[in-house]
Image (cartoon, rainbow, N blue to C red; front, side, top):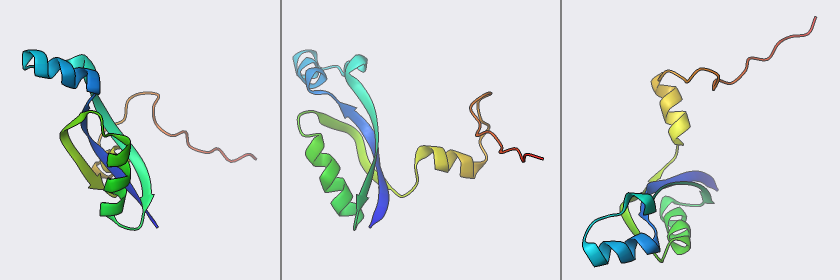
Length: 93
């Protein structure tokens, strides 16, 4: 089994109802989804996550990737926020 990350922009069921009433997407009902999933294939991982999110609507995605957003940003060499870096281990003498 491999670890896959499913990410996307999801509109909650309450937001879907509001969107049908006035035609606009309510920002307060949008969720950024990033879920780790263990599966044999990307298709299987996608099916497993889509079963959890059936009431609302995917606005963007869902997209299946093999690295998390954190891993992707670290690989790019993006700067970290102060105080958010992983502490270096100190050797005791």
